[in-house]
Image (cartoon, rainbow, N blue to C red):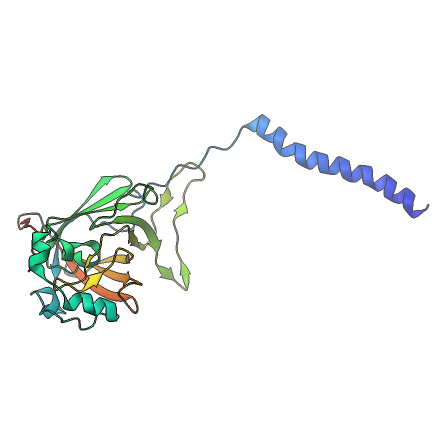
Length: 272
């Protein structure tokens, strides 16, 4: 038999097989129905850590920059470029007060460094809220998408939150689904990551050390419980600002959980 005849006989069989493979899934879906769609992830239900409640900041370092208003021109440990240094050297709190901008040092990139108490609650299944008594500020952590196109810059900006898995044996442990399609993912061990954009220009410290409206804030919240039952969380903050900083400015702040809100004492922003 010549080669051409073989090809002519094999080709129809190949076409029949291809048609069958295409048609079988369609027939199967028609007979058994489509599988149910997976339920949307509920950030509140899969939360690997519970940050709700009342917390107080524990200041164990950087007292001269956190517990009192630093001297004008004291920019030590902040990687300012020459432009940022000039802005800090020109700080005038009276001008801020006159302009109604006393809250410049209570914006998101500095707020967690302010000695304060926090009250953390869930607004709904997709939004976590942090209120501070110092400066009476509110931060909202959105788990359900990026900022709307018309979102206006503000002191607290727009914060996009995600749960991230901890490394275990060199691999990230991510949420896993139990019970097949339609079931909620199981909560992993993990931490909270928050990326804040759409910021209004403000201060990294009360003495006028600046960050610009181009700055972004990346934070990592991680909690733990001591053997005596005390509960803490640490937030590591990374401020990136191409306008005023030569490199990212990294800090970590500690908060201890309180039994209730009996010590909650909201106070307004102070420029001095």
